[in-house]
Image (cartoon, rainbow, N blue to C red):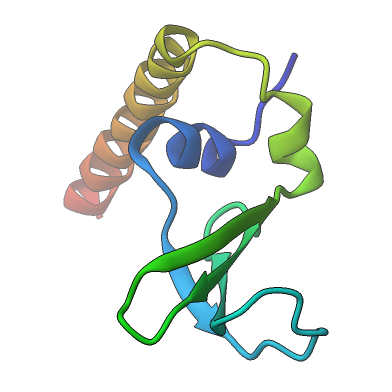
Length: 101
């Protein structure tokens, strides 16, 4: 199965969350905080109470992320290391080409 490198990175070392406006219906007590991952586009909705406590947390994984949720953490780390090697190799090749020019 071909896995998107962004999904591998998110599952292995964590998401890169950014807050986006929440326009949905309020379903829990507290203030909603909607976050979307910059890499894999999964979303997380937290409800925070007035003391900063987490009232509720829900996830809406991206379609790519949903496909591979059954893999173990060890499998994700192996996938990540393979992708990382590819990226490093590609960057090294690019740097060598720049030096030749």
